[in-house]
Length: 306
Image 1 (cartoon, rainbow, N blue to C red):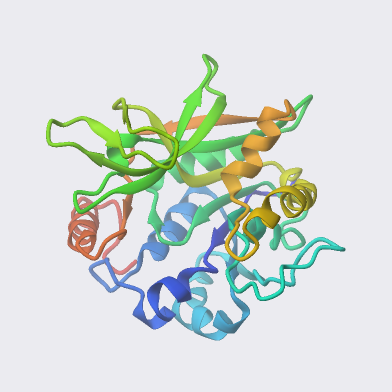
Image 2 (image 1 turned 60 degrees about the vertical axis):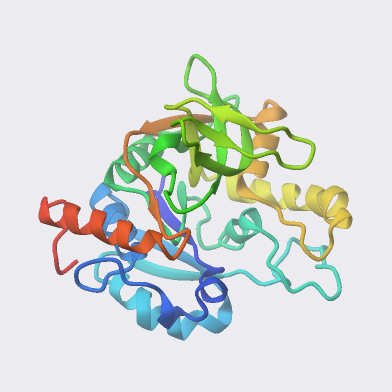
């Protein structure tokens, strides 16, 4: 089996940050979050990275990020576009919004063929422990009567921000540590009395999340079977879900995995980590992330000239 490959979903970076040159530095040497992810992935064992980007960002991305990554890894680019689809599918006329994270990963299908893959967001700080556990799992994972996938689950209290609410995939696992359900909760925060709560969302009432509950930060691991399976998932999405919201409906990675689990075709092992997640969800988060990275650098976890 080929070695695991890191797949980084970065097609939304340009739109969210108003151009790659505006990506906020958070490290003592001007490093961005993605620099730390690549460094952590490389020392965990990954030797190749596939960036999923928009085609028009290729030159700017290579200059800002790709060229640095090449010091550690083999670098390839996959492009998420609305016309990159399984044969016979066509995006709705007038659609401009990308088709979601599962579609983004499908766009790397040919480059990642035959390889186990770890999938991450470009703008989340996952921590070294998460990459180590992911790489070790993928080295030994093999499908049998089911597709054997995994995800890294973070303790919910380690993924909050003091500056507002966050959305998280709240996970339930069985006694063997396999994912049984993942429910997207929007507007999660810590209440004044210390409880972790989420707001009502449509017909779903507000509720509470126990400390220690694992949540998904979109760090998934897949055997080589998964990306080809997204062909049929995209076809189901286009037939059943997209017509309900043709301009904004998206095919998300957790939904694609959950669909296979519900059908009894796959399992997803929840790899737990005590690592703290960091991200700049709000402008006020940046000083917190910078202070945390500076502390890790001072402790010797990262070189200053990363």
